[in-house]
Image (tube, rainbow, N blue to C red; front, side, top):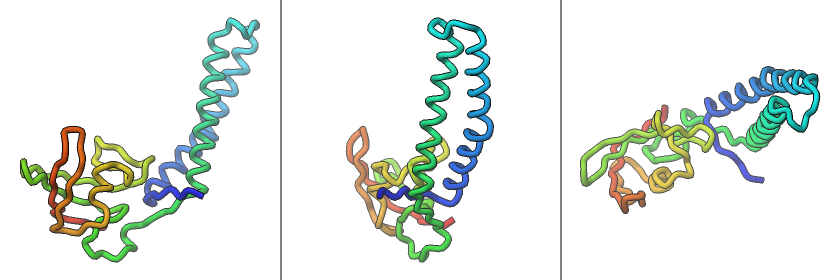
Amino acid sequence: MQRYPMTPQGKEALEKELHQLKSIERPRITAAIAEAREHGDLKENAEYHAAREQQGFCEGRVQDIEGKLGAAQVIDVKELEQNGRVVFGVTVTIENLDTEEQKTYMIVGDDEADFKINKISVNSPIARGLLGKSEGDEAKIQTPNGEVEYEIVSVEYL
């Protein structure tokens, strides 16, 4: 069985989304389908077809979340040995050795990743290039613009 690594916050966010889908979205969509049925001919009823499409999306997402929560491997980085190594859940600051530009990322599960707020997936090229390394180590990471060398400036277990 495939395990899905996630932070405690990521698990909580998925649980909230699941609750929202089951307790609010499902009943709303069911009511929309019932209302659209009352309008008669279903073949040419755009409201009915839109509601059925929403229902399919909602049910698919519910199954996806339930599957991931069932196979979740919750990792609380605060409980790990704080030895300066880059592992799932840490916040790592890296410096581009060519430009001296620094970036800070938190390494999280796929569902938690949001590049806009510097949360990167454990499966991303940057995270894969950093995992297992320690503060002060250098890492070569393949980017769309070619290989970039980074130095790991700090590793925080927040």
